[in-house]
Length: 204
Image: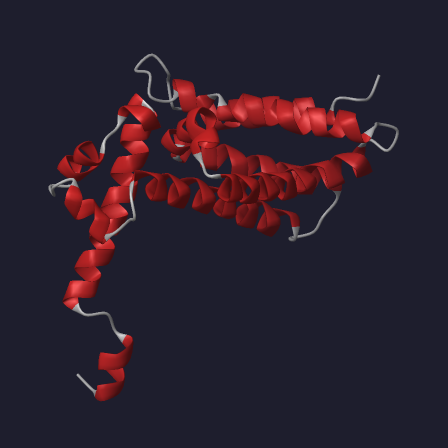
């Protein structure tokens, strides 16, 4: 290995530490979704990753730091994905179709994190909660900007209501996707068509 490579490539120890951190985030998402933030201890988190509770502190300052990492990163991911969909151009229907496609994929692939957000968002400290709210509002604006073009006679309140109604529809999969009674095949096109119908229905 060259001197340059040794300065840029992570060591085995660094890779192992990063993998353990990722494992803690995955298990925190799963356990918080199952039992709620208040129902999970550091010992639970450590045991799920094969380490002791105190060993979690090598990666995070505490349980709340894990929640912050999960929900702030999730909000950044959603906004970044929505921004990419919106910036690809097209008429309002095309942009909204891409936003629906992105949000549906996110909801179906990451139902656990949506459950954590729904239940435990208010467990964040004030500054991180404000950051998440800001990112959420920026994401909503990506939708309402297109809705205002599609329904020029509608009010800003009606555009925001439509967006929230669609989020409620798509995010509801977080509560049903784990059920053995829920058939996964055909779920995405069904949700997408229902969402687009809500977004495109004419203003009365």
